[in-house]
View 1 (spheres, rainbow, N blue to C red):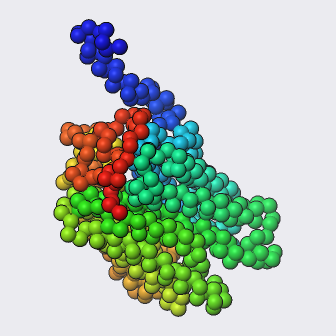
View 2: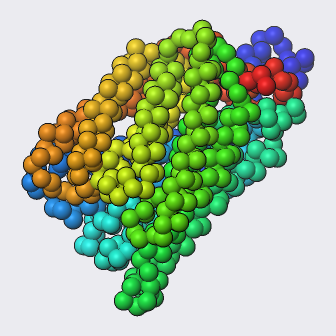
View 3: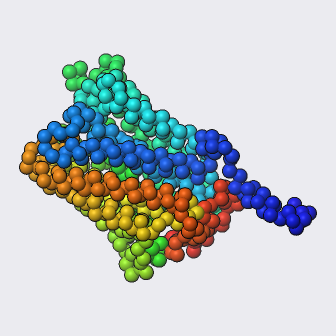
Length: 544
């Protein structure tokens, strides 16, 4: 075609050619509402999770404001309980999980050399379910009966006292589950069917491996949650007695069913984080990942063990001694593959030519602080000790150390690491580092005192407390407000990077980066890898 064009037409031809490679749909609705492109769907997930992160964060601010001083200060106790419940549901199902699915959508096709996800239409649907689910969940706060106020675990009999809004909560949870299952099926299908020639399973980047294992976990446990909340629904509206002791049911049965979902769920939130950190540390250490194969096996081992530790959440319900021993030892066992991972991360950095850009800072912050969260988890695994710690702020401190400087820091590391690739612009390194240091300091001011509160006996999920806990709560709340405010910087850095940044990103954004996504332009064409690349062993992040 270009041969019969005159010289004067070359500009228009180039433009046409560029468009031909990109063919983005025109018009807002066509581009965003009906999109089946993995990059656009990924972007929608990431924007949605950022919005939810701030909504969930605003609820956390209400919680910390109420607990700033002893006595009932600002809100009604029932509303306080609604805030603790909604904050957890939104952060887990609305912020962390969709953010990981967003990164999966963006990165997995580019990392394995695929043109798109295997099931693009389902991909679109699995996203658009979410805004409706969360609108439904948040709408309960404006109903007469108020939102759910039984904690995110939704334990009966307390949860069965929720009014008419209960149906909305259950339906919203069902929709989130459907979205997760569809997203997972899509990821599994993509990884198994669409890898480029030469991309063997043991050449895949760690992020792809961790997501493959996470997707299987999701497909396994989401139906269990759906079953549990449906039984609650029939207990509430149809007079069944699954969990009603007066009618011959057993409220402890719910705990078993819920935690059979709930414990794999916490690994669903953290395994992709392990993958991200395993991508970032080698890049900025300028060394291959140490012990790649053992990382893959460790991830699979963690996923398997996550199914046999659930009852450590319920040591105090009166289980037989044999049961308590089994779950104690199984829980301790899960710390071994996790320890293998930490060892491999430290070994990757050992004697590397390290530089400390923002993604690296968040990744190192992750390794250090996640390990603290892991150690407090090991303390909680000891049954005899757990009788003392159970339902206190020590538990809150433990899971927030693995979720905030764990999952959320890894999400932030991933954002700073790949945003230049996604947007084609560099973020402000100065403001990125300021965001990291303020977050790293204040996250510890927020959550570290809670260990002491828990050990001193302060219960969870209460709006009021004895005066002896006042000092530590005040420190914790100040940390909370400062940490919350710092995240506005995060949003600022992202917006500046996408819309205002003048610095163009190169294709290989980071000097030490390896892997297929870095062979593409920044931003990548709308349709990348229309001809699959051939992968050789030296392209991988690792050498084994």
